[in-house]
Length: 431
Image 1 (tube, rainbow, N blue to C red):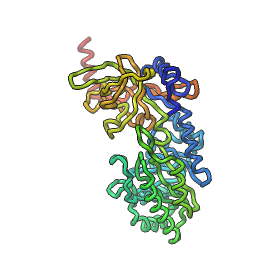
Image 2 (cartoon, rainbow, N blue to C red):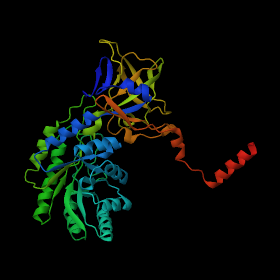
Image 3 (tube, helix red, strand yellow):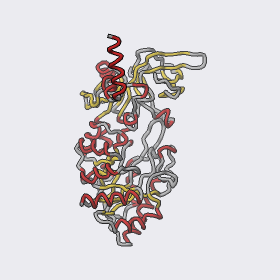
Image 4 (cartoon, helix red, strand yellow):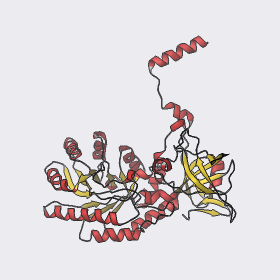
C-alpha cells in the first residue's frame, strides 16, 4: 500500500499527511487514494487486454460517487445489485451499455428501471424472475439481454457468510436446470437469453475453486451452443481476495491466465466484476483516541470510530491493520490492547489483543484496508452520524461525501398527526 506510507514521520495518503485532513475535518473519516484506484484498475484491465473482456466494477464494495466516477473515467463498466446502485453508476457516467444488473431478489420496479435504461445485461437467478422479466419486456415492447446465473455447487473456501456458489446458498440456478430454462427463455418474446454468469464468493485466496466453477460454466456454454443457443457472454463475477494481514491471494496475472485457459475455445465476450480487489486497499479509516482505560484484566484503547462505521471485525471476525499517524520510533515497545468504540455493545470493537505502541488520548490512528465493504455497510446505530469521505489526488484532497449533520439525521423522521397535536397542546400549556 505505497499510497499510504510514512513520509517525514507522518502517515500520508499520496502527498497529503492524514493529520492535515484530521485537523481540518475532525475525526473519524474515510480517505481514499486516487492513485491506488487507478493503478489497480489499470492492472486488472491490462491482464485481460488481448481478450474481448469487459471489466465491470462491483459497486457493492464501495458506491461512493467519486470512487465510481474514478473508475468510469478509467473505462470501467458497472456490476450493480439494486436500483440505487444503478442510479449511482449512471450518475457517475458509466454508459448503460456497460452495466450488468445482478442479485437474487430484484423487484419488479428494479427490473423495470433496468429495462427502461437499456442496460447491457440482467443476470437472472430463478425461473420466477425469468418469467417476470419476460412479462415486463413484453409490456415495454423492449428486448432485453439476459444471462442465467448458475450455481455450480463449488465451495469458495472463504468465510461462510460471503460464499455464494454452494448448493445451499440462495444464489443462482442449479446446473441441471439451466438447459430447460434456456429452452423456456428462447420461447419468450423480447428475451435475448445469450449468456451465463457465475459468482462463487468474495475474498478468495486460491484459484482452484475458480477453476472448477469456470470450467463448469465453459462446458455448459459449449453444450448450450451445440443445442443451437447463441452464447455471447460469460460473466465470471468477482471475489478475488486482497491482503489484509498475511493472506497471499493469487496475482492478477495468474488469475487472468487461468480464465483465458478455461475459455480458450469461447469466442464471445468475458465479463469480470472485481470489487474488493480494486478498492479494498485504496482506503483508510482515521480515528482519534478518546481514552486509554486500564483494568486488572484488560487494556482498552477507546476511539471515536465504532462498529457502526466499521462492522467487519464484529460481523466477520475480520482483521484490519492499525497504525498511528505519527511514525513510532524504531524499536518502540508494543503492548496489547483492545481497540474499541463508543457504541453500547460489547461487540463494538475494531481490533482485539492488538500489539500497538504507547498511545494516549488525542493520538490519531489509521485503520487500513477500509476501502471495501466499510462505508457501504455503515449505519447510524446509536444515532451516530455517518462519516465524511475524502479523496486524495497527489498533493490535493477533497471532501467527496460530507459528514451527516444532526439536523439531517432528525429530518428523516416524521411525527403522525396525533403526536403533532399532542406536542402543540403541551407547548401551549407550557406557555
